[in-house]
Length: 519
Image 1 (cartoon, rainbow, N blue to C red):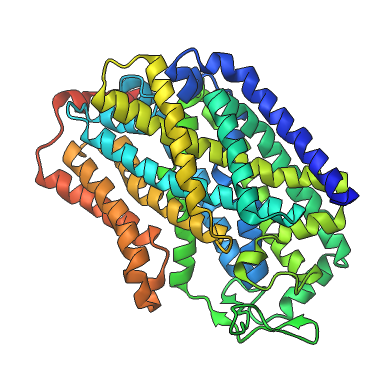
Image 2 (image 1 turned 180 degrees about the horizontal axis):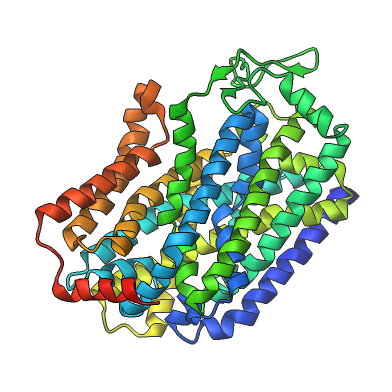
């Protein structure tokens, strides 16, 4: 290990030590009760609510996946995805946050998403709770795997160690941290990590642009590649038999630009629909200390999101100008941020920038693990099998569940050629279609009933798998992002089944009106 690598490692160790100290600081309060452990006692301020929501949402995908897409095929895919996410973020904070905060208190002080849905419909038999917990377990395990892939790629690229070994080391650190501190530690560290992430993005975009010869040079290079710098076209890397981009005379080879039609744009914009069903974001709405503080949180969140997404896309464009042949596969292209940082900065500063990737990964994976564990321990173990379970028993089951989920996620993440963007997109679609329509109808349509809620969850989740694994293979118009058709299908099922079955009880309608009319 040379001196440069040692300096990078020292900087990252310092960062990880700070994160662990945060976990230990909040461990005592987190262990006082399951509500403190899973929701922080509804004590988050507006800044922590906003920054932790966005940091836990974006994950390593923001610093590796999104720049990788821009580096590999140009502006269109990355930009339309970013625009969809920005719109979805704004609408979610605008219309969902306040009503969910209010309704979660009214619905028997719900502290998890399955709790809320079950209490919203006043369930005796916990079918909604069990289904919601099961879907959270499935999709968050996939999500956690994407974070472990990020850890593996980061450490193996930096230190030249085997991918699988480094992935396991990163996963173990995340697991230890999550077990220690719970939701409060997670939210506090996410606040810090959101700052680290945006600083890292800002530093790299400025230095890489200057190194490439300025903004004009970056744009000129992008425009020289067919379809690369277009909103309505897509660059097509020419690949050899091994699946690597062909290089001739020291330059990457691209084929003719592909058209980027309205259906493809709608498919990318559909990423924004995912926010309505994203547990790690929705829980922050439930955890803020005062409903009226959500307006300030929305403004903070939007500034962070717009700046971060815009910079992340441009980093991929600048990376193609500086290192046109450094990454010759879609999977490898997700390392462009690492390449830019290690080649442009002094080692010690590169280490802190690399901590930005680690920050993004930790901020998401701890959320995913904690929410998935709460789904099993709080909603299935205590909610269904052992209703008289003590807080200590619930938290012990939660920690065992954390370990099991992490092991499964590590198994999924064993493939070194995994593309983070693709893994995240599937889990994102799963949550968006399973919980998004249900959340919107639960908050804004009085006529939705328990049968409609169950139909919406099952149909949304089922359609994600069906579309991704079967229908999309037909190509053409059927190759759109699975979230869009699954979201629509789930919404239709909720409305049809609710109207064909008995209306909700008077008590449920009174709850709805009380929340609707509260100021």
